[in-house]
Length: 319
Image 1 (cartoon, rainbow, N blue to C red):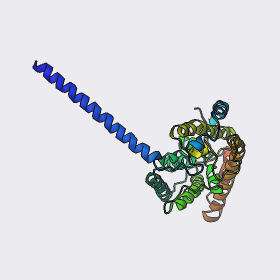
Image 2 (cartoon, rainbow, N blue to C red):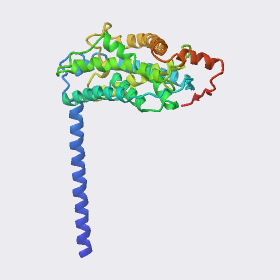
Image 3 (cartoon, one colour):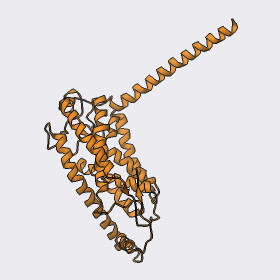
Image 4 (cartoon, helix red, strand yellow):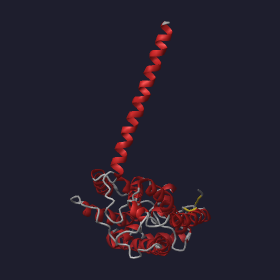
């Protein structure tokens, strides 16, 4: 009898603990959900809601998805293996000032998202790019992983150019929020130049290497049509304009996603390759003018490496 009593007490205690755990989990879920989408105003054009979700018919979204998703997977697969070799030695310079300032900018953006209860927008590619760059600022300059992440980041980064050219500011109402918008996107364009100055793994691929171009664009496309599209359908929020065009989109029509894929496949390689070439030229100019003449420029070091005077063995990264 006594053993049955204690067994019953134990069973009731377990039931109580399970109910309490379930209740706590539900409360936590409600809090996270509220911070993610609780402050999103669907009445603002391009923000989300039923009108935005119905901008494209379901059959068109499905048809575009079954074309672009397999095509992106195939293109990414065909671009492997990727060259992750680099030729320049790592410069021993401090990154803490850049890392601190950049972290403060992104921290302010995170705070704005939590205050306005629009945290779901942190999934937008520019925030992903910022996260990648913050990770790179903490990684060793001799790591193949850093080289892989850096070269991939160069094909997510051009979105900052579009964000500055066609800013979406109709949802930013808090004091200083517009300033942080511009500060973050300018930082996205400045930080890679500093990383190239550090050298080592933070070296773009060769101008004629389009394997990284195909791989980067493919992952960028998959991120939109898989991650953002699914997230938008669940939350009814227009993540990076995957469900309806932005108010500043010059190609507003039912074909806007197809047009976007087309012009992104053209503009991203042009912007990324041009940016890399100009950044390397700026780094070389800085070294020539402001550093000791005995320190060879990046271009000279690359020429020396081509003549086999720097014996760093090239490597292939197999995913």
